[in-house]
Amino acid sequence: MPRPGPRRAERLDLTRKTVELVRVAVEVAGTVTIKPYPKSQAGRRTVPVPDFAFELLTAHRDVFPAGPRGEVFTNSSAGPLRRTLFRARVWRPSLVRAGLLGNVSRLGHFKWRAAWLDLEGVEWTAEFTTEREAVAHVAKMAPGGLRFHDLRHSYATELVSRGVPVNDVQAVMGHEKPSTTLNLYTHRSDGRDQRIREAFADDPLTPNDD
Image 1 (cartoon, rainbow, N blue to C red):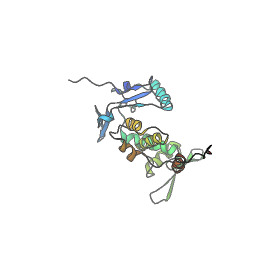
Image 2: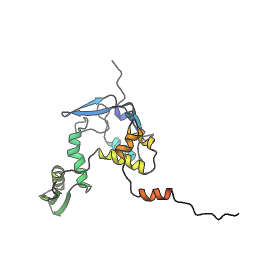
Image 3: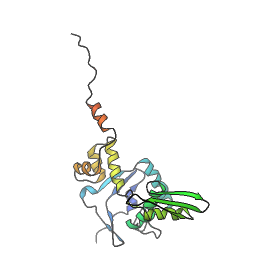
Image 4: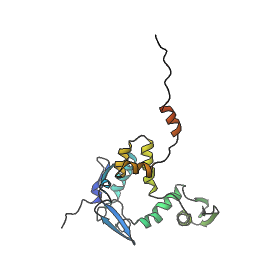
């Protein structure tokens, strides 16, 4: 029998501020299974954790113990998170509260207004006695919205825009080729045209001493 791999919580190194990716969780028909390897060799990688995320992870780990298989984040039963439930119960309500999906406003005591646009651009509204109910309703009814996977796109684009070399971005993204990183997860950044002009700007001519 092969030796079990390290539990996932052990792959989160808060001393070095890194997380090591060595396995993946797959949800099929409501059941989460663990694959002991990513889909490619490049997928096995170590990713630096930014300071703000390090602080949040440290606080989380101080309050919530790891799951039975080493999960850092678990559901209310200490089991692995299901993508579908996370999207409905955590991610989309978070978008509403952040002002990125619909709108929830307080009208008075025990009175909250939920508002959202449908696919035709028509605004719909409903009233609730609690903010939580209003947020949940917008999260359920409003179409579109930022996807959780879109954070991966934003992460890679931000790194490239801030001058991180493409080969370094490729490594933390787990891509076999840098062209994949450029093609999938980057786009034209603000101020591109001016930066290109400045890169080829001539220095002031120096008078010739001869």
